[in-house]
Amino acid sequence: MVSCPLTFCLCLHVSIVQLPSSICFSCFITHSLSFWLFLYSGVVNEYVKQVRQLACQLLDMVGEGLGLQDTRVFSRLLQDSENDSLVRLNHYPPWPGSDRAGGDADRDPAGGKSRDKRSGGGRIGFGEHSDPQILSILRSNDVDGLQILSAQADDGGVWIPVPADPVAFYVIVGDALQAMTNGRLVSVRHRAMANSCRPRTSTVFFGAPSPGTRITPLPQMIKPDAPRRYKSFTWAEYKKAMYSLRLGHNRLDLFLADPDDHDQESGISN
Image (cartoon, rainbow, N blue to C red; front, top):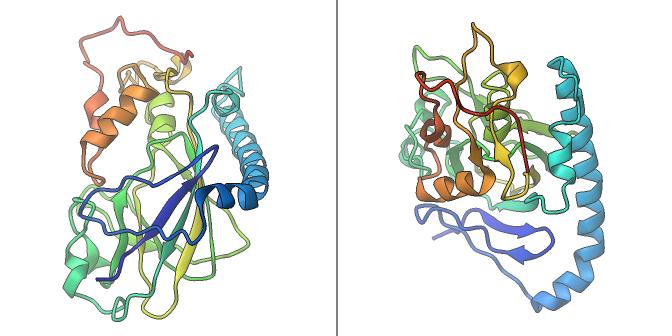
C-alpha cells in the first residue's frame, strides 16, 4: 500500500499529525530528532516568523474591511505568546491512475459525502475538510491538487480545481474566523488530490489562538438581520470537539447558538 500523505508538523516542536485512521500516512526520519531540530530549527523559525507576519497583516485588512474599530482584534490572537499556531509540511506521492474517474474516487477517506463524480474523479490524498483555525496560508510546488468546494446548496456543491502556483500563497478562512465574524466570512471546505505522475508538496501555516482564548461572534457582527449564530467556546474546547469527529464533519454545527438565548456574551477574550 502506498502511504499518502507523508505529513508532519514543524513548530516549536516536531510531532506527528494525528489523522483519522482511514487516511494512510507515514513519516520517515533518517536522522535523530535532535539532529533535525538542530539542522532546520533556524530556517523553520524564520519561516514561521515571516508567514505569521503575513497572516497578521491579512487579518488586519480583514478587520478594516469589516469596518471594525479595533482592526487588530484578530491578529493579536496570533501574536499571543501562548498561541497554538503550527506549520505542517505535506507530501503526496504519485498515485498511478489517479487522474482516471471512478474507482477509489468515489470513497472519501475523510468521511464526508463523495462528490468526486462532479470533478472528474481522481485519488484523494487528503479528504474534504475545513481548517479549524483562524486562517491558513498555504504554499505548494507546481503540481495541481488543491480543490475547493463551491457553496451550492441545491446540489451539494462542485469541486473546483485550484491551479498550482509555486510563487503564490493561498489564503484559507478557518472555522474560528467564521465564528468570530458570525458567518460573515465562511471557512472553505477543501481537499487535496494525488497526481498520477508527479509528487505534490505543500507547506501550510495554521494561525490559531491560545488554548484558553474564548471565541465568540464580535458584537459588531450581530445585527437584527444577522442574529447570533454561534455559542461562545474556547479554542481548547473546539479542538476537543474536532478530535471527536471525523475529518469531513462540520464541527461548527456543535456550537450553533440557541435562538432563544439572548444573554450570551459577545467579544473575544483570553
